[in-house]
Length: 96
View (cartoon, one colour):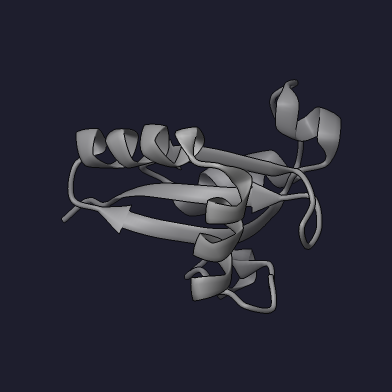
Protein backbone atom coordinates (compact mmCIF):
# COMPACT_ATOMS: atom_id res chain seq x y z
CA UNK A 1 0.00 0.00 0.00
CA UNK A 2 1.27 3.43 -0.89
CA UNK A 3 1.03 6.23 1.65
CA UNK A 4 0.93 9.95 1.15
CA UNK A 5 2.27 12.31 3.78
CA UNK A 6 1.66 15.78 5.11
CA UNK A 7 4.74 17.19 6.81
CA UNK A 8 6.05 20.25 8.60
CA UNK A 9 9.64 21.45 8.35
CA UNK A 10 11.33 24.13 10.41
CA UNK A 11 14.57 26.09 10.40
CA UNK A 12 14.98 25.62 14.18
CA UNK A 13 12.81 25.19 17.27
CA UNK A 14 9.99 27.76 17.03
CA UNK A 15 11.55 28.98 13.77
CA UNK A 16 10.18 29.41 10.27
CA UNK A 17 7.65 26.70 9.36
CA UNK A 18 6.80 25.07 6.04
CA UNK A 19 3.94 22.63 5.42
CA UNK A 20 3.92 20.31 2.42
CA UNK A 21 2.64 16.96 1.14
CA UNK A 22 4.31 14.16 -0.81
CA UNK A 23 4.18 10.47 -1.66
CA UNK A 24 7.91 10.10 -0.89
CA UNK A 25 8.61 11.65 2.50
CA UNK A 26 12.22 10.56 2.79
CA UNK A 27 13.08 11.72 -0.73
CA UNK A 28 11.25 15.01 -0.39
CA UNK A 29 12.93 15.92 2.90
CA UNK A 30 16.30 14.98 1.36
CA UNK A 31 15.54 17.45 -1.43
CA UNK A 32 14.80 20.17 1.13
CA UNK A 33 17.99 19.40 3.07
CA UNK A 34 20.08 19.53 -0.10
CA UNK A 35 18.35 22.62 -1.50
CA UNK A 36 17.55 20.82 -4.75
CA UNK A 37 14.92 23.40 -5.66
CA UNK A 38 15.23 27.15 -5.26
CA UNK A 39 12.39 28.54 -3.23
CA UNK A 40 11.08 29.29 0.23
CA UNK A 41 12.72 26.40 2.10
CA UNK A 42 16.15 26.84 0.54
CA UNK A 43 16.04 30.62 1.01
CA UNK A 44 15.14 30.40 4.72
CA UNK A 45 17.04 27.21 5.64
CA UNK A 46 13.87 25.27 6.44
CA UNK A 47 15.03 21.63 6.37
CA UNK A 48 14.31 19.92 9.70
CA UNK A 49 11.40 17.47 9.66
CA UNK A 50 9.50 18.03 12.92
CA UNK A 51 6.06 16.55 12.17
CA UNK A 52 4.41 14.27 9.64
CA UNK A 53 1.18 12.36 9.18
CA UNK A 54 0.42 9.48 6.78
CA UNK A 55 -2.72 9.38 4.61
CA UNK A 56 -4.20 6.65 2.45
CA UNK A 57 -4.89 8.94 -0.50
CA UNK A 58 -3.23 11.86 -2.27
CA UNK A 59 -6.44 13.85 -1.92
CA UNK A 60 -6.55 13.18 1.82
CA UNK A 61 -2.99 14.43 2.27
CA UNK A 62 -3.57 17.46 0.06
CA UNK A 63 -6.76 18.39 1.93
CA UNK A 64 -4.98 18.10 5.29
CA UNK A 65 -2.03 20.17 3.98
CA UNK A 66 -4.40 22.96 2.92
CA UNK A 67 -6.18 22.78 6.29
CA UNK A 68 -2.93 23.13 8.26
CA UNK A 69 -1.70 25.96 6.02
CA UNK A 70 -4.79 27.94 7.06
CA UNK A 71 -4.15 27.43 10.78
CA UNK A 72 -2.78 30.08 13.07
CA UNK A 73 0.84 29.58 14.10
CA UNK A 74 0.07 28.55 17.74
CA UNK A 75 -2.08 25.68 16.45
CA UNK A 76 0.78 24.45 14.26
CA UNK A 77 3.21 24.64 17.19
CA UNK A 78 0.79 22.61 19.32
CA UNK A 79 0.47 20.01 16.54
CA UNK A 80 4.26 19.68 16.29
CA UNK A 81 4.72 19.42 20.06
CA UNK A 82 2.00 16.76 20.36
CA UNK A 83 4.17 14.43 18.24
CA UNK A 84 7.63 15.83 18.82
CA UNK A 85 7.90 17.86 22.07
CA UNK A 86 11.68 18.25 21.74
CA UNK A 87 11.51 19.38 18.10
CA UNK A 88 13.96 16.66 17.02
CA UNK A 89 14.72 16.33 13.32
CA UNK A 90 12.71 13.20 12.48
CA UNK A 91 14.43 12.64 9.14
CA UNK A 92 16.98 10.28 10.69
CA UNK A 93 14.17 8.17 12.19
CA UNK A 94 12.65 7.42 8.77
CA UNK A 95 13.51 4.03 7.30
CA UNK A 96 16.29 4.74 4.80
